[in-house]
Length: 173
Image (cartoon, rainbow, N blue to C red):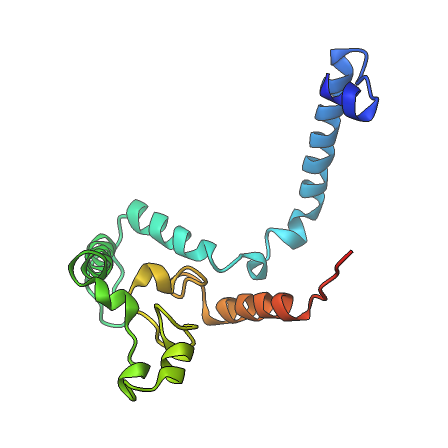
């Protein structure tokens, strides 16, 4: 009904036509994926780095062996629990105990009476141009996730976002 009203298109006459079109497009996609898997899936360079953290976590939970690496004798499950406890505490402490840690404005401590400095570097009432604006992990990881992504992935994503914000011309009709 909507297609007829907006586009003057009645749709296919039979339901089998819709089913065959859907199946053919899916089979073409699977066929192209099968043809390109040798150079798009199987090479180790094709693995996106953010998936490595998920692979490592699943491997830690599903392997029985505990290999000693660089003198570490702690099991993978124990290491996961240590990291979970530390991350939970680091999240819980600034959010519920000392909420002022979310607005750590150390630059204005240098010159407390300077209004221009507070306007530029202030976290709450200023522009927030502060290299270390917070100790709150949720605010720190909204843009990038430094624990999962390697440094080059974070750098490329930041540069990509900055170039798109500054280089795209503003077209006003």
